[in-house]
Image (tube, rainbow, N blue to C red):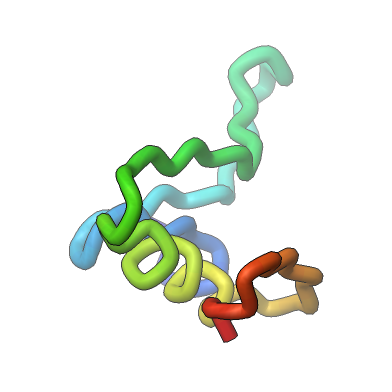
Length: 70
């Protein structure tokens, strides 16, 4: 976990994945792609999407077809 909070991706309440420290071989470099799987009402937006969006340091365009997120 990186000490700069915005350099991490939140995974759980206590676990984070740092995005700093690029490996010398680009084949093993991390990207920011994340797959979130869960059924309806399981908390994907509440517990993953919203916390990660709120800690980011730049602007994002979020598509919310139902208008329930923000």
